Amino acid sequence: MLVFARMQRCLPAVLLAVTLAWPGLVHAGEERLAVPPPAPAPATGAPLAAAPPAAPVEEDSLAIYVMTFGPGDHPFFKFGHDALLVRDRKSGQDRVYNFGTFRFDAPGLIPEFLHGRLTYWLSVSSLAATIAGYERENRSIALQELALPTAEKRALRARLEENARPENREYKYDYFLDNCSTRVRDAVDRATGGALREASRAPGRLTLREQALRMTADTLPLYLALDLVLAGATDRPTDRWAEMYIPQELERGLRAVVLPGPNGPHPLVASEQTVFAANRAPPREAPPARFVTLLLVGLGIALLFVALGWAAHRPPVRAFLGVLVALWGTLVGFIGCFLLYAWTLTDHVVAHGNENIFQCAPWAVSLLVLGVGVAFGSRRATLAALRVTVAALLLGLVGWGLKAHPAFHQHNAELIALLLPTWFGMSIALLHARHGS
Image 1 (cartoon, one colour):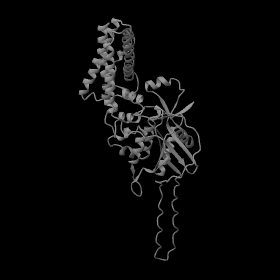
Image 2 (spheres, helix red, strand yellow):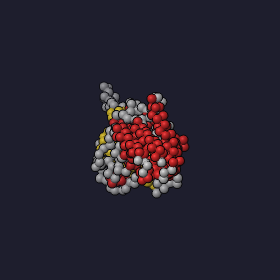
Image 3 (cartoon, helix red, strand yellow):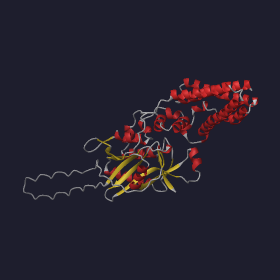
């Protein structure tokens, strides 16, 4: 079954059909051919020559719109989505071109996702079905009509039709570099002769990481997961062009484009219309500052470990300490293993070289077994767990110290503040537990 996947960055959703009473839209950017004034009558009595026939005025029945859809409730829908709408007034046909389509039931979907090799494609749907689906999800819908010359509108439609053919429609999806928003951006840029790219050379408003975090700030688990897996490549200075992997940023960028015309320069965006206003707060303009909050959480976990270590001579307390050591070590160690896997075995380039691996020692997964030994009072297991924890602490300190070197520029101070204190607290707790065994 084919289902539309709209990335919020452009991720999946089902488009449902309804009818839409569509208001008339102001159309701009039409080319009109001026009719030359008649030649003056000759002064002599010579017979008048027949006037040449007026050049036919080319009919412009096409209108091109960029559709921008706001975030939804589901974590997958937090980044918004966009598409291209081609309206043919002559035929009364509206076609929505969506670059965010994939199959939920595709063989090997999960392995492809994990390896960063998902196949997406360009699909075409009706406007009514598209509007119905997003209204039902309470997601805003905005239209920007593009003031393109007639020839460019026809050429854009022809390229979209060719791109939507089964043999041409598929592409390898990348959440930051090649997604539904960047595909719309590139299509519009070509139609404007590179004007969108030229207008987007200004420094970016935010980094790629900051854009992702601001869109997910109100969903803490997703916010932390993204902050963990995104490497330093997403912290480099960027320009407005790269920021347009977020549909909302593309919507802003289109407003800055000015095109030449026979009557002088004019904006690319001829008109804007809100088709549906969602009943939800708009996304934040910048990510929240959470360093102090995460530091306090890290210190609180560390103090809990220390308190349990001091009282580990009591069997129930020692058992609780062992369970926490097992759970925490398994969680953080698994994250470290995943970061190592994403770096070495996948095409997720934004996760390569992730400095968070210093705070998430992969060998900490061994605490799953050693923590059980701690819970049962095994001195040997407690000593082994202490060594594993101290090694993780030392790795975390190395990662913290390397921040002084400009080559280690990843913005992960919040995660260091959360994770490094816990290794301190766990080390002290296991040291006391070993002596109290």
